[in-house]
Image (cartoon, rainbow, N blue to C red; front, side):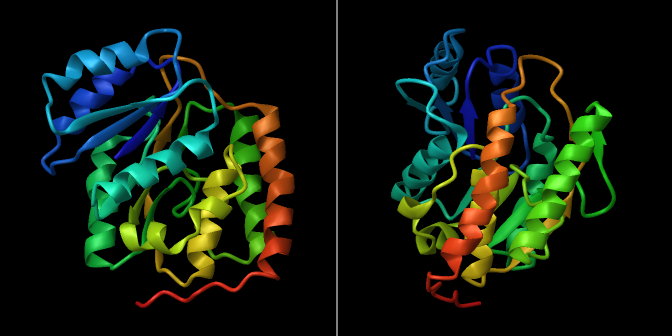
Length: 241
C-alpha cells in the first residue's frame, strides 16, 4: 500500500499501526516529500518495529501527489507486488475498507477497485456542503467528457492489479494533482480493464491540514479536456480479461 505524506505527524503512526493490525497482511510504503514537521522521522523509528513490512521513500521536496504515486508504482512493480493500493494518511479513507478493495480484485477479477463515495448515494461526512457539491459535480463533468461509467472519478482510494500499471505507460501520465486520479482511471478504462466501485464512507480529516487547493482543482478541470483530446490520437492496447 502506498501512502504519500506531507506534514502528517498527527496521523502517520496511527495509520501505520492500524494497517498492520488488519487481518490481511499488508506491506506499506510511505512516500514523504521532505515534511518539515518530521513525518519521515516518525516512520524511520517505526521501521525497526515492523521490519520487512514498513518502507520509506524520501523525496527532496513537495513534488505533487501524482509524481509521488508514480514513484510508488515503480517501486512496487520493482519489488514484485501483485496488488498495489493508494490511500490517504489522514483517515478520510477507512483502512478497514482495504480488505473490501482487495476482495473486489480477487473475487470480481477487477483490474482496478475504487473506494467510491458516490456509487450508493453521496457518502461523505464532515465536508462543507460547497465542497461536497464541487466534488460530486467534478465527477459528473468527468463522466460527460470521458464517457466513463464511473461514479467517483476523482477517488483516491484504490487497488490496482499490477498488470494495469504494467500496461499503462506511466511516463505518459500528464496530470500531477488530483487530476492524476482521473487520468489513471481513464487510461485503465481505455485499455479495457474491468473497474469495480466499492461503496465506502469518506470522512474528512480530523487532524492535520488538507492539501486541496483551487489550483489543483483547476488543473483537473482543463486537464481532463486535454486528456480526452489526446486520447483521440492514441492507440490503447486492449487488456486480456
